[in-house]
Length: 82
Image (cartoon, rainbow, N blue to C red; front, side, top):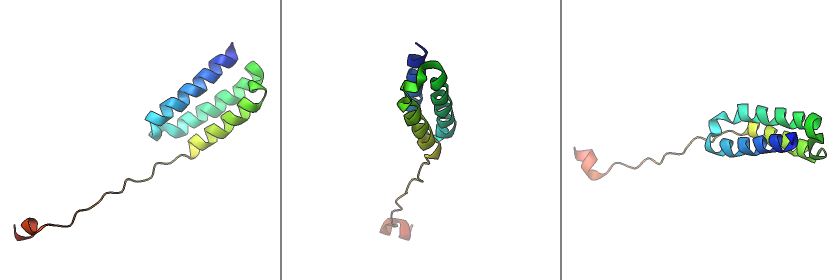
């Protein structure tokens, strides 16, 4: 039962991180924390779930948004003469 709870929370954290990428560092910490706790509560999905959770949390912590590229238009003739 507790394994389903931890797995559901980790899945929910993954979905939330897609919509709020600026908070990926704290969400990654929570993911790693829940993955380690799953070893105690539910044998960590036979340890594969723990490993995948720790790797996913580490990737979440390392996720950085690239700066948006802004395309600058050249001035037109109307803007130059004005």
